[in-house]
Length: 219
Length: 219
Image (cartoon, rainbow over all chains, first blue to last red; front, side, top):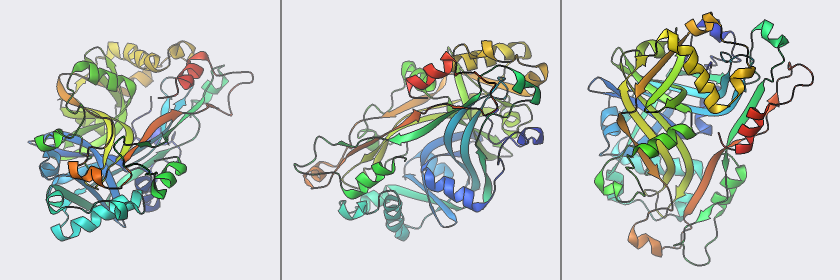
């Protein structure tokens, strides 16, 4: 399957729709649509990667983790690679080789910078507000020891690229004559009905920032 | 948010359900449920990562890419790190700090070995059959130049771990007294109605391997 989204071989690029869409608007839209990401870093010469969450503020990307985590310690001040991939469907072609994945993906490179102590609380608040506007105003405030236990890293959105593959299979010209069903099986991440914590106090209903998030139907 | 799934700090492990489920059955189930993965590798001392697809045969994991791709060339015979993460929901706690992500994640480490030429076709067939049983029998056969253009890598499932976080938020004991709505917003990847290629020959209907895949409802 032609699933290697970082593939840059020109003979394959031909067959992809819009692959190599490097513009910032595409990168921003993908980052804003999907907080889940993976961050790769190097420790003792070996590659590691960690799933985490990212958020964007202008031309910078942020992520965070426990100050004690190996991934955060290895990232600080070092080169990292961050990827967000949104899978949109399975592309069923007339040959195995031309099977593919419809996806939107961003890969960024850079040096992970530590967000200064006095800016951490504001950034963490912005992160949660970005996902669920209004939530932080109902939460118990951040405690100093929680801030201390959390490290925020960031880097400029400067090096990297977006790769977008959408649309039908791209088969070899002669394969279109074959009686083989081809097409796309779309996939999407759905948001389902919220499950209240059994320990919620009586009478609490999901606030508007929760119901609105669920009504949007995609996370 | 407590989203750092590779976090091993003991004070945080306490608060996670089932985190650190290292057993093979858990690892196999996660790998088998989600072909999408990211692979990290090191090139000139810097970390890179590539989204791709993985499949499992017994105690080995396989992935593939264009023989010309940078990621494949950098992986061959070198250490890689491979991660599969299935996001199951947003965990809405009573403090920002205890917000989390319900997820199943596997991270594997190892040396990427090249699958010998004479085994490639059988492995690629097994990969497609694993997802859509019966599909390869209706496809146009693999061509020698397609096999040549594709490199398969594999490694034993030997080093690594699974991390599983499920269930309600784990708040600080005193926070349960607060009138804050907490709970889980479940998310899932849905499979939607297949879109036939406009260039399909007349009269072709989606075969059983497509309708069964869609009926299972999750990819």
